Length: 411
Image 1 (spheres, rainbow, N blue to C red):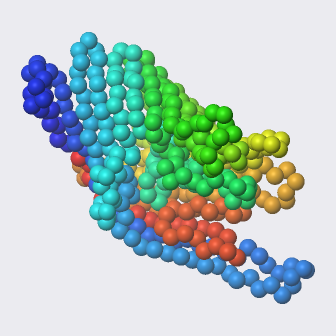
Image 2 (image 1 turned 180 degrees about the vertical axis):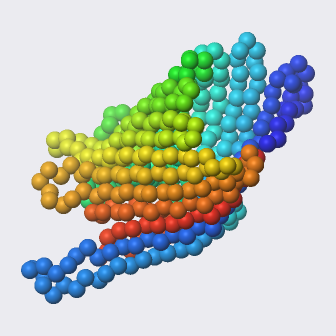
Image 3 (image 1 turned 135 degrees about the vertical axis):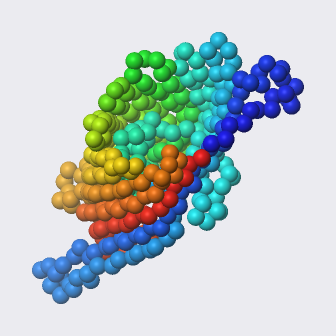
């Protein structure tokens, strides 16, 4: 890590302020060899109505790759702080993803985080693109976090729901396509105003967030242009917890408007609530998370208002066990969808994941790692550890497994 004094003198500012400001260049470069195998199977068999049907067996697609971010997200960023006196400080944070395996993505934008803030005894007010409160629990309370083949299964499912809208079996005709700007809306939001509680509350912490959708509205509404999105991008969230001694626990909730079409009268909203906890026993650290995610498509207009809900319930528990200079990480998670179809005999999709990893620290900033994970899909769930997509059509996703072997260096 390098810390540079800002050249305030070059801008004509007083020399007294020179020593009170700093900028830090920081980042992570993580690369490894990864392997993926995704298996689909034909779920059909001969029936009285079709006695001559021959099951087509299974299909597996696999890939081996030089990957990035198997242990930690590769990134580069700049952050700085200026002491304003009287306990006040102004700061900024600009952070960009990098694809160090190919070098094709670098500092072309700061989509991971781009904020400016003012902090003091009152806490911190932060403006810009930042991490959603509910996503924070996914990586804080999972021993393998949200990187590599062992990525938190709840995060995988929540991200898939935010990208896909309502999963296909409950897709409503005419629902507008997913906006490219919102493809990672589960994790981060733009145009956000956040407030963070001060750090001296005896272990209690918290934050509230509001993101503007910045959409144009027409009055009267009947003059709204065709296919105008007037709501997507709006986010409201909060997270409150307690971190003292061996215990860290936090409850988070959010409401995220993903899609809308004013004239069609459709709005897709994702509501998330999760509770995470970690307890350090010394010889091991225990983790757990329970989450509830609801995708609600609200349809209103000339006809009576209707809605179509898809719920997801997730549960994860894991452990970190220090071993010499390294740590063994393990987790088990499961998710279950509920399509709210009271008269249907079709079972709802569900999936489970088992992940195991070892991180060997060569220094405070450099580590070797090895991870393996397997996901079991049932009843049409299609979650994977990464790599190529499943073979579909007559086949249903069944199993996904993979490994990461890599090196992470932080600076």
